[in-house]
Each structure stands twice: as structure tokens, then as C-alpha cells.
Image 1 (spheres, rainbow, N blue to C red):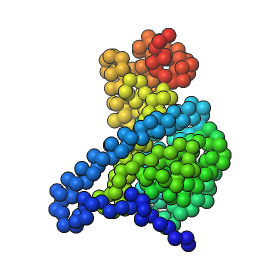
Image 2 (image 1 turned 135 degrees about the vertical axis):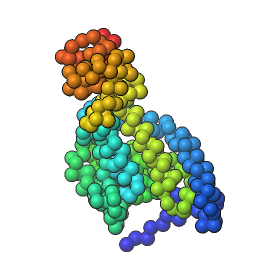
Image 3 (image 1 turned 180 degrees about the vertical axis):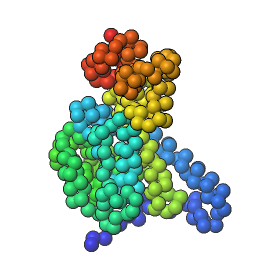
Image 4 (image 1 turned 180 degrees about the horizontal axis):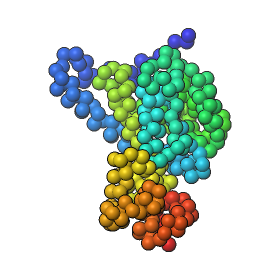
Length: 299
């Protein structure tokens, strides 16, 4: 097996502020962790222009029937899956946002030895979901050198899909395999090499931005409300009523009655009430305007 050198990476460097971490009391540890986490917000801010470019690519892909595919190993892979899974209840996505992780689903709860070192596994995982030119693949890796993530981008480019890399080191190897590279430098971890900490936080923040802004871009938000949420339990049904009331100023009873008529579609209920139209007309408008509630109300 070829030797792997990672000591030059900032994510692997010793943090001079925590050289005596084992001598600190709990409050001292927590204070320094909190202070180090403050740097993450600043680091993410530096790459916002690149994140915006990423959002533009993802939004366009989704409008064209493509998908957002996250790919990574370990913590990075888990964060991608987490974001994809949370898009389902929040935005009623089906297959539009997916996550793959080195080692498969079982790797989400238990590390799979050596899986991250295979570029071939990434290709096979993307082949299984029929990756195509309309899709966007975002490979996530703190180090910027994980073979699985690099393999994912190489395969994406080979089929004509957009290839985006997110790493936490500058001049990352991953970046040279990407159409668009995001390098968010958070510096050495409090616990040396434990990239589930600042690097993981930075990645989570960026994925939150990408998925949320992209969903706004395809009409799944009205104002700042989750109008494409599917109320699949009692709590979410109450939230749906609240969203309709907040959006329209209607009474709870009117919200409840209209949601029933609309088959619990929040968007449809809002258009029915604000547009003063019946179910069929509200559905027609939403279809015509690609699901954008505000556009449905301007005619």
C-alpha cells in the first residue's frame, strides 16, 4: 500500500492553544472549544461567493430534472446523508437530494475499514443511482485528499455531471478534480486531527446553505416559510395550519378546512385563500408557475 502523507495538512496540525488539553478542567475545555468554533463562521464567510456559485448550479440542475448528490466518507459522508434526509420532510423531496457514503449505508453508524481509500467504490455507488449529466455531485472531505471523494468527482465529470468539491484545506487535491472548488480553512482542531469538530461544523453550515438556498430557488419557500412541507403526523399538521394562517391571515378553522380541500398541500391552500380561487385553479397556477406561490398570486 502506498504511503499516505497528511502531516502537512492544516486540519492535521497541532493547535497551539490546546497543547495542554488534558490538564484543563471542563469549563476551560468548553471555553476554548467555543472560541475556536467562532472561527468557523468567519472561515465560511470567506467562501460565500463559491457557495453562491454552487447554489446556482444546483438550482439549475433541479429545475432541469437533475439531482443533488452528496458523496463522502466518514463524518463528511454522514453530514451529506443527514442533509439529504432532512430535505425530505422539510421540502418534500423524493429522489432530488441524495447522499452516498464510502462503505454504504452501514457506514453511517459504524466505520467501514478502508472504504474511503477506494475511488472505484465511489464510481460503483454513483453507477447504482444512474448518475447522469443533469445531476450535480458534491464531494465532501475535510482533508481534501480522500480517494472516495476524488473518485466521485472523476466519475461525475466522465458522465457530464457537475462536479463540486468541498474541503477544509487550501490547495486541496480534490479541487483539481472539481469544476468548482470550495476550500474553507478552519485551521487546526482543538483535538488534533479530529475533523468532526471545526471542519465538520463548517461542512454542515455549507450544506445547510446549499440545500436551503437551492430549495428557495426552485419555489419550495414562500416568504421564509416551508410551504412544500408534507404534514405526515399530527405535529406537522399543526405546523401546516400555522403556516397557512401566517401566510394568509385566515382563521384556524379556515386553514384546517382549506388544507383538507387541498389534500394537505400547504402551497395549494395558500393560493386558494389569497387568490380567492377553487382547488383546480390553484393547482393550475402552481403547475404553470413551477410551484412558486408568489408568482401564482401576481396574476
